[in-house]
Amino acid sequence: MNKRAWCVVRGAWLLLIAASTATAQTLERRVAGASDGSVRFSFAARPGVYGNGRNMISWDCDRGNCRNRQVDGNWNDHDDWDAPCDSGPVRVALSKSGGRIIDLRVYVGGEWRASTSATDLGMVSTKDAASYLLALALRDESRAAEKAIFPAVLADSVTIWPDLLKIAKSDDVSRKARRSAVFWLGQAAGDAATRGLTDLVDDGRQDHEVRESAVFALSQRPRDEGVPALIRVARENKDPDLRRKAIFWLGQSDDPRALALFEELLTRP
Image (cartoon, rainbow, N blue to C red; front, side, top):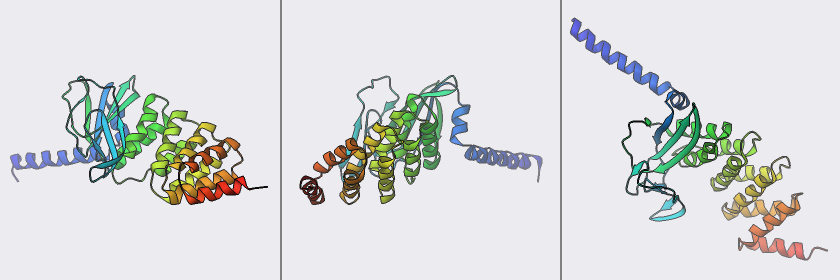
């Protein structure tokens, strides 16, 4: 092999090593190594998530109908986006100051506007993105903590409800972050999430407002999961205020099991 060919092979090898190193480096380390200012990254959105790339994000969408939508009116022409409505990716812009993440913005769809000051980390895996965002929610006390949960929920092909339970039960995170975790637990699919919410309601050591949020979250579950759980709270929980909250949400369910409970309570000697 001549010298020129060897240089080409060696250069290609070094590029492969550099690419492998970048892949192995965690998103947390990449964010930590970025300069203060705006730090951006993007990842794939789960099915049924749409956004206009600016101030609107919808989820649980099917055939043009969306069950949930978030609209942020606080934007202007100087924001990060120009975009039509589409199905992804999820884009997160972190605000970093003094080496700390102090705020967070999330968008779905579109393209980043050109910036000479922002650090763009590019597309990252949904697993890395969700892990980073949930860790931020668990350990941080800034506004970014409570905002970090929403984009994690939008990530494709990840299971996050165990982490949400950990956040909801932690005494070391802000009340807003805990209530946000409880809300999204209520939206999560599966019996396991509902069991966790019921345990949270029953845990007398938890903040009362967080437990109230768990009762509300149970009311947002599908009937076959939420109604039996609310009935158990109404019958058995030791906190009279939580029992009243459960009964209130049962009253909104129009479920015959709730009516049977009301008759039982009203005719009890």
